[in-house]
Image 1: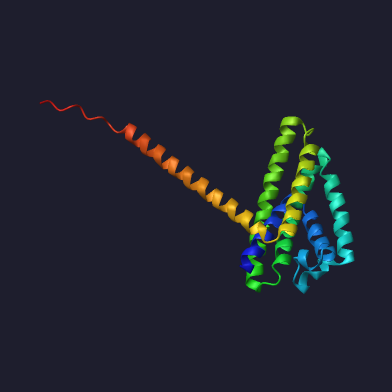
Image 2: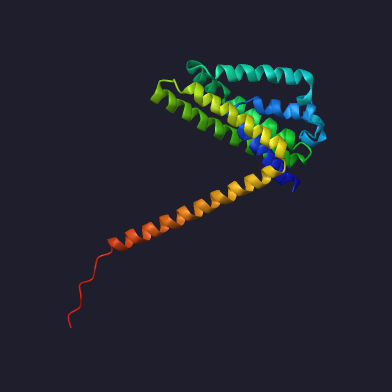
Length: 208
């Protein structure tokens, strides 16, 4: 159960890192520094530096720079290009930080999966931004950026505040996706069956 909880928290924080690399890490560090044992998700001494004053200052500066630069239409695409590896690494770090109390093999696997998840969210974000630039000449990009800021902050805070409840959300989403996939495959199979039946030659009626 501890692995499941850590996996859910790590993946949700990694998804947030796919939108903003440093904001989820700042939320995680501040929660561990100011929130007491109930909100401190960094249980391993290996990652305790994330709660230190120098780390929190550095993360705060990085958040301001990243959020501000993402509001500039000409600069946001360059930022997305450069920050692909950064957001992937941030997702891996966030997942490893909340799973640091688990066995090493579990922490490593979770970090790798979380990094892939962060990269996937980042790729989707970048594609949406390119579409916005092509269709609105970049005028909608700052608004989209603000929505991403809110989504990233909300998901990060929910991950920290709700803790184990994230497992229920992740489980519900997973079950819903599986249900939709099964229905889609069933409809596709039924459609193919109808098409193959329509293509069969009709036998002429037998003469009696």
